[in-house]
Length: 315
Image 1 (cartoon, helix red, strand yellow):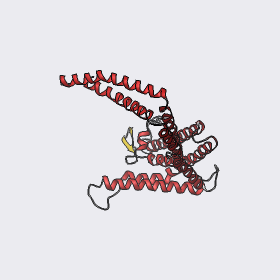
Image 2 (cartoon, rainbow, N blue to C red; image 1 turned 60 degrees about the vertical axis):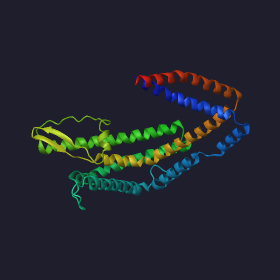
Image 3 (cartoon, one colour; image 1 turned 30 degrees about the vertical axis):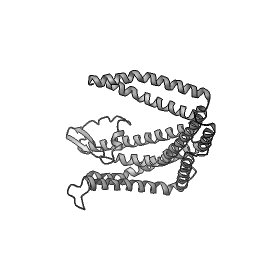
């Protein structure tokens, strides 16, 4: 590290500390009336926390209206398939727009859709949608369990966040099992049709190593099998679409968790700000701030000398 880099690095904490102590001194030298008025205004200001709480409550109420309060509510027989249909059509429409905007080299209005997209739509709506229904249905029931835990213990409690983590982990586990099943099924079908005399390879269950391919909606994964009849590349199931349907089912849960976390952080910010203003008005804090400001200034002198030396030396 050169002298110039060291000086630049040291000036950052010096500037922050000097600014903070300067603020403490400024507040400390102000009148007590101004400090009390500032505290009153901070206490009256909501800091936006109530808005996030209302947003989370509204979001959870809409979720319960759509999918019901009970775990086995009958309306789910209609709303879950409708939800999967809307989400899947939305993602396929996004895929089509991506092809027309970024892969339309001819610049024409009508472009033939890629074979992978047509195959993905066929595979998803003929067999993949059944696995998606099971995964989404389980994700929704787990989301209900998490929301109920939040209502009973509080949305900022350890029980609620443990339920959220369990909900996400269990849903992803179900998704990984479904993907593994489709991979094995595709492999068995390929070898039965093209290389029936070959021994079947072992496909390892690796849920986390396949996560990258699950996130890529516009580049569905393909598998290459090396057989005695040659190399074959297969496209089996649009696993990104299944993944995004399952993830969308848990958006409400994440929205509730994040909203309450932001609301709690804003409340902490409010209480910290009030505590700082109250503390800055005491004589003990004022004296400590002045001493700290002087020490920071003394420490900054050698750093400034190093900076001047670096400039003179041309570093």
